[in-house]
Image (cartoon, rainbow, N blue to C red):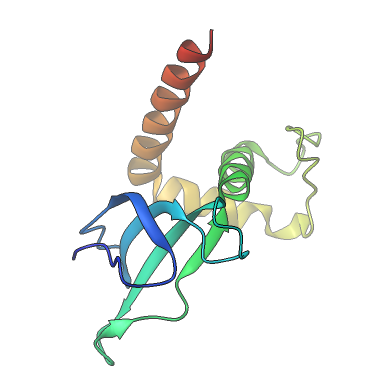
Length: 133
């Protein structure tokens, strides 16, 4: 599905035909919020088959929050019941130590799909860091 360009978030770079459940497109573009014409955000465009319209539940996040979530996700794959925290500068905490195993189970069940994305993330982060030198 094409990336919508008629909504408040204005895509600059995107992924069309994303097709992850109801998420149909991803975008980096001009933010809908705040009312700063220079603010850049990431957007997950959700499409409702029932209504045939783009969903109002589509998420828009500032880029630093998307990166922080990525850091937290990778750290969560490394945490077990005995892990000393924090692992990152985010100063993450374990809110429910009894449920840590559920993250590990999810990771192992979805490892092939997740590992491919983590490898790609590592590759592009390495490329970014090399260009910064």
